[in-house]
Amino acid sequence: MPNTLTAEESAAGWHLLFDGKSLEHWRASDQPGSFSVKDGAIVVRGPRSHLFYTGPVQQHDFKNFELKVDVMTFPKANSGVYFHTKWQEVGWPELGYEVQVNNSHSDPSRTGGLWGVQDYLKVVSPDHQWFTLTVRVEGKHVTTFVNSEKTADYIEESPIVRKKGLEKRYLASGTFALQGHDPESEAHFRNIKVKVLP
Image: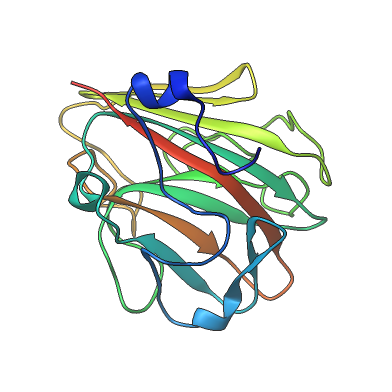
């Protein structure tokens, strides 16, 4: 069943962040109408907006964790999953990293890469198919997977060197956010679950 945990997952410390029915414990910036719930999934489509997790798990402040999200993209979709970010009322989130979600948009950075930091250029899963995006953060080490394929393996350097506009992309702690990029982009998210790591 989508948006549920098995007894084994619960015992292992996994927590659901999305109930499959509502946007309870999530808060949208800019254009809240860009997010809705249909058939057990968060549907992202509309003007630029970001949906931040604001719920009780870990007081929505995660440092070391494993996050799993099932995602389906549609043609020309550009979206993303932010981590170590903070609520921001308008604009692109300044803090944290974005794990790209893009299988056919004109941006060459594809799903699973750390956008603007360690991009991934290969399409692993095509549009119209559910895939599982996994993000794991332990200390300064970030790994991501699309299904079983590793798409990022990054150790944050010191000192941090970033492109202009990405100066605040660094590891700290924070919440998660889903990206609504533009009115032509549609992506669906379900089975959003996290396990806090030591």
